[in-house]
Each structure stands twice: as C-alpha cells, then as structure tokens.
Image 1 (cartoon, rainbow, N blue to C red):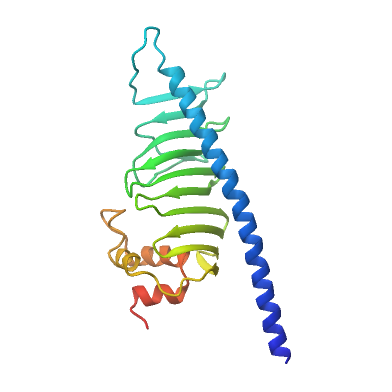
Image 2 (image 1 turned 60 degrees about the vertical axis):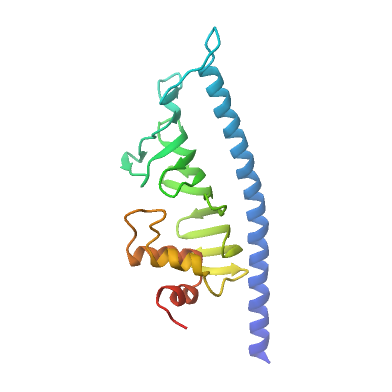
Length: 230
C-alpha cells in the first residue's frame, strides 16, 4: 500500500509539473510572438526610411547598419550576416544567414530575426551575454519549435511530423514529454540515419545525430530508431 501511495504521489507531482510547464510555455509563446511582430514592424520602418528617395523609385543594398550616438552598431540588416562575437570571441553561425540582427550597447549580438541557408529555416533568436537562450523557429516543411533554456535545462514546445508535444530536458536528455513519443516516425528516423543531410549537406556523425535525437525524444525511442532495438 505504501508503494502504491508513493507512486500515486510521484504521478501527481509529475502532472503538476507538466501543467506548470504548459502554462509557462503558453505565456512565453505569446511574448515571443509579440516580439516577432514588433521586430518585423521595426524592420519595415527602417527599410522604408532607408529606401525613401525624394523622387520615388527603389533602393537596393546588401547591408544596412544603424548606429547609436557613440557609433556602436545596434541594428544590422543584411543579406549575408557576419558571424556573432560572443564575449570577444568569434562564434561561427554554422550556416549563411540573412535578416536583421540586434546588438546591445557594447556591440554584442543579442538576437535576431533571420533565415538560414542550410535547412531553409526561419527563426527568432534571443541571446544573453553568454550565448543564445531562446529560439522560435519554423522549417520549410511546416514544422515549428519554441525552445527556452538556461544552463543544462531546456523546455521545448514542438510540432512536426511526429506530433505536437511539450518536453523538458536536462543535460541534453528528455526527462518529461507530454504526450510522450514512444516511436519515432519513419521519415524522421530515415533523416537521422542519413545524418540529416537534407539540412547539413556534409552530414553529421552518429554521435551528433544521437545527441540531437536525445534532445527531442526519449532514449528508448532513439535506440529503436538508431540501433534498430525492438
């Protein structure tokens, strides 16, 4: 009877945690959607101001940089954005990107609204001083994900061919998922086994693929797909 009581208490605690995660995720999704709209409006206003010649017509540029009174670049709109500089270090983006980037008063990148050439994804990123902490991304196939993380803790709301679910991860492994995906879909599994070459032409090695899988699905589901376990 004691074991049953402990199991019931544990299940109730997990359900409470999931409900809290869902409420937090809904609020944050709303704030990110609002931030996206405000950013898009700011981009449109900047483009209109920059492209308004006296006699009409159009203006075509490869990059537009807005600076503050101290000469620090605060907004950059470009067709080929440079790599980020985080705490004085150059951090490669991993893919060519185009869109708008925002910088703080020190000139450090703090987020942007961009499209990436590899994978053809579009996303809104929000960064702290030490790196990225939020990502709202949509893929060309209609999939979408909202990720928020701090340190090793991650909350993800994802909708793709494997279903819509809310996941909590720690140390790059899924701890809680609602509803849980017991078996990865055939299409996703095939992409994993092919090294995600549809997004990264040179492909990723098995360890990288397993890491990506474990951040999206339970370990048993990844083992079934990647190792052929039953």
